[in-house]
Amino acid sequence: MSGTIRSWVIVLAAACFLSFLAFMPLPPQVFLAAAYFSFIIGNAELKKGGGLVDASAGGRPNPMMRQAAPTAPASATAAIQLPERPMLDQFPSDLKCPSCGANIKPTTKLCGYCGTSIIPLVELPEPKKLAALEVGKSVRVKHPQKGEVTYRVTGRILYTELWQATRGTNVPWTPTGNFFAGFALEPGGFLLNWQDRFYILDEKRGLTDMDINRDFAPHARTFAQSNQTSRVEFGYGGGRWLMVDIGRFAIEFEDGEGLHLHKGAIGRFIHAASGNQALVVDDFQSGGSGGQDTLLKGYLINETDITY
Image (cartoon, rainbow, N blue to C red; front, side):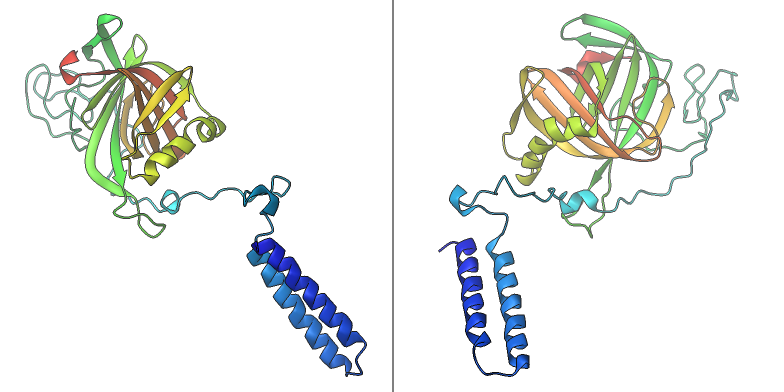
């Protein structure tokens, strides 16, 4: 007997019992007590029987009943703990090398003109790759479709990778100690390194939370439930994509212009591939004016395809 049918049988039996008591010469207190306990039992059985389940539908949720909104995984609501790192609200734009007078940046440790070692105004951790590529420099990329292209770097961001030791709301997200760099390019493009992967991303467009929840979040959730071991494919934009990596980030530093994320932004990322084509979703979550949810598309490239 299904939970729902059983619940209604018990409630009906309780009603018959109360009707029988109504004709018995008993004090009113006995009748009231019996009614109270019958109500408690019946209510509990209805809840346990699952009022949102249609028995005729083989246990599927009843489409006529209003369903509760799905809750986010516990890990998604956990606190994020970032190290305290002194930062200036505004960086001076007229810094000079003390030896040759060349323009330098707040993060410069070695003058690019005379080679003098400099104590930087802002001490930042080094990204694992592309550490010497800075705003204003040129970079040549062997593009899979366009051949060799020379870009000028107009903006640079430093990603901090975040992780949880175990899942749960009481386990904070903390930095792994890995830092990765992304670069806004001119003519339009975004160069990104994450782990051992390098991307040249030519297309960029803003996303809404509705876009992400509809097109990407269900597949990312499936990928996460397998501890990123399952082969998860999904359709998007007329193509088939394979989940490659998901995780969380914080933006440690930004410099220059043309960036879709800014210092203080915290969010989630999704990386997917279709052959050598690449898809990157940056789902900005917090950090004041930290950024715009963004979809970037382009190509996977090799580190040796990048020279500067």
